[in-house]
Each structure stands twice: as C-alpha cells, then as structure tokens.
Length: 581
Image (cartoon, helix red, strand yellow):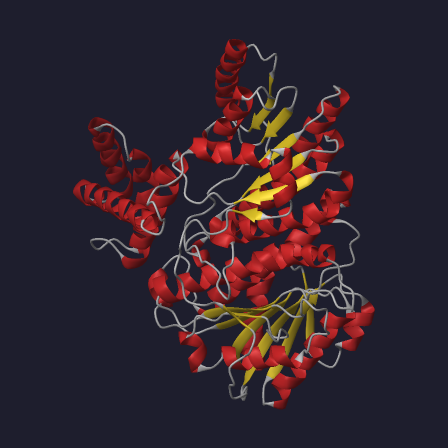
C-alpha cells in the first residue's frame, strides 16, 4: 500500500483511463477525488472504488465532484475552494480529462469546436493545476497525460490528420508541463507529462478511428453521394457500429428515410467505414515494436510510477515516454530558407498583426517594405485596441482596425483587399511576442485566456478564413481543394533575447510555439496528402535558444519561398530562421 494516507485527484475519471488510474491508486491505499461532467458514471465508479477500499481495509475514501467541466473556470475554482475549506491536501493531480475534438479536415472544422477542444485539453490542464496548488504541499506531483503525436524527433514533427485542434492543444500541454516544472521547483512540487501512445479505449475504437474513416470517405466520395451527404449520413450511422444486427438495420432504415438515400448504400457505407477504421488501427500497430496498444491498466501503472518520490525527482519536467511509436514522416522543421525570387507585382499581401511589443512593429515594417520594394501592395489588419504609438508607426501602410475574434470581419476584409488592392498572394498572421510575465502559474484565468486566444485561437481563425478565401466553399466540399493554390504564413512568438536567458523564460514562450508546430504540420498533411491541394500553411518561429536578436529580413525570405513552386512539394513548413544549428 504505497500510497496510504495520500490523496489523488484525477480529472475525467468516471470512465476509461481516468477510472483505471483511480482504481490503481485505491489499490495502493490512496484516497481519490474523481470528477467529470456526468454524474452517473462517477457514482458507479465510486461504488466500485469503495468496494476495493473496503476489501483492503486501507481506510481510504472516495469523493466525487459531478458536473465539473475542466474548461469551466467556476467549476474548477469552486471544487478546489471546497477542498481547501475542508482541509484536504491533494498529493497528486492527474490531468487526464480530454475529448476527441472534431475529427475532420481543418477547413471543415467548427471554430467553436476548435476553441472548445483547446479549452478542455490545454486550459483545463492549466487552470486545474494552478487552482490545485492551494491544496498541495511540498512533495506534491502534477501528472499531465498528453499524446505522442506532438512530441518532436530531430527535425521532425508528427502530423495527426483530421485532428488540428487536438494536436494544437496537446502540443502546448506538453510544453506547459515543462514550464510548470521550472516555476514550481521552489515549492517542492513536481510536474511531469506522459505520452502513453495508442491505448485500448472506447473513444479510439468508437469515435476517433470511425470518424477518421468517414472523413476519408467525405473527401474521396462514396457511390455518388456528395460530401455533404456523406457527412450527414456518417453522423447518423456511426453510432450503429458494434450494435446488434436488428439495431443496425433499424438505424440505417431511419437514416435512409431522413436523408432520402438508399438503405443499401448506407449499409455498404457503414461496412466501408468499419473496414477503413480497422485498417487505420492495424497500420498504427505496425509502428509499435510489439504491435500492441497499451491497456488502460498499463497507463495507470505508469502514472503511479511517476508519482513515486524517487522517480518523480529524476524525471521532473520531462515528457515521457516520447517515442514508443515509430511514426516515419518527412522532415518538417528547418532553419535555412531555400532561395526564391521575390516578385509581388500586381498583387497584395494581407498582414494580420496582433502586436505586443516594438519588435512586432519592426517585423511588420521590414516585411511590408520588402513586399512594396518588389512590386506588391500591403493591407494591414490590426486589433481595435492597438496602442496609438504602434498605429502611428505603421501609418505609412494601408491599415484597418478589426475585432480579431470576429471571423466574419476577417472574411470581409480579405474580400475587400482583393477587390481594391489586387489579387492576394499571401495572408500573413503575426502573433506578436509573449508579453512580460513573471510566472505562468501565478496568472489569472483572464490573463491566461488572453494568451490562448492570441497565440492559438486567433492564428487558427486566420488560417481557416484564409483557406476559405483561397478555396471558396472548400470546407464543405473538399473536392474544390484539388490543385488549388494559396499561401498562408504564421509568424509566431520569438524566443526571449539576452545573454543570460533562463530555461524558465524559454519554457513560457515554448508553450505557444509548441502549439503552432503540430498545428502547422497537421493542417499541411491534410492539404497535401488528403485534399491534394497546392495551398500551404507555413510557420516562422523567430529567435534562438542562445538569446540572439531575430533578423526580420529572414521572415521575408520565408514569405518569398512560400510563393514558389518548390514550396508546394516540400515537407519543410516550420522555419527556425535565426537558428544556425
């Protein structure tokens, strides 16, 4: 009973991996706090956990918090306030709660679903950890469960097609776990992330793989059905997988009548979806040495191992295991930009700027002057809250002020720019640098939400609206993407500059750079491999790990390259332009 008189809080613990972790803890003598949005599975899980406790006579307890959404500020704040008032010490927080998010090509994904996925995975981890600190003491541990799809190998970033919002939030979550380890070490609290790889679960078999299979069919077509019909049919027939034949027949008949589609077509479609889903599972297993997905119990055991004091001290701040799955992909990351001819004659470039510091303004000036020098025009879109000092500096360029969160405004201005200034060659989104922050773990929820919007949600909105501009209607009808052109460039936040930059300073900005990397590679895999499009999204991450000043001219070189024919066929889409190694 290794964890006698200890208390573990596990998010998303009514079912699945979270429940398996709670079970492993009570078997080792710990009390557990389980929480989730649905009450029924939590009550059922609590009953099973209590039986284990009664049998072992450990004296531990089970406490449930139903109706708790980890993305909801009040839900988490109130839960921890209650625990603190009751004098509860939480020894281990396990950030496990998650959702699949939309499983579809990014141009077809609802932006509400995108921001919701980020809110649950990333913000839920942040706020649940920060609020939990009030109930923790020295020796406490925060274990964050993420995904292997967002861990980099040298010069490589793994894409996860159809999962743009999932990878964006998970990549940031890995880096958040690292940043928290730097900031909490003085408090004696350890932060570790673990990427267990593929795990046997209902979510992956009943949701992710079938939805991915259905998305392949939406893109490629099925027996004369248009993409919208495939999508609507999938929503109705996917829940039938694994059901009895009578339920399947009734469900297909109902769907056929509702959609005015032949029932036999829907039956064959369901069979095809199941076949593709099984193929995806088989292909994934062949990337693992023993060809085995982990069981939920194995994930639980790995989490408990990380809660061991001696092991926790060794791996504090690490993301483990990083590479259980060998996922061969083309290189995505480089530093030297291939040469390309600069020619913007008769066209314009739209720059969406979300400024933070003077360096952001200089990036825009350098980039805009480069475009104008080579025959192009520039349209600059900035938030309504832009300080006058910044707007005055940029007054020489054609500027407009917009609500950065209003996608309708973005769409309208893209169209206006094309009419008045010429064909749009590229759309550039400059996130601005990270504002000066003492500690991430001491931020308010409003401050954190502002950063997530600035560095994750707004760039995603710009990319989606840019793709809609370059390929009108392509989200709903993926056939329109085939052979279509379009260049989109994200300029992310710089690494901090100076002679003595701490790991803590770099770790803070890497949270958001860590989101842009998997997001970029995932969207590009969809564009190139699935949609057969020439449209591309590129990301520039300025600055160096040694703290050198960024060279803004290097960003202009990436923009030139992004418009070249070579860029359409290269797998290199992330440019660390200032790094020399």
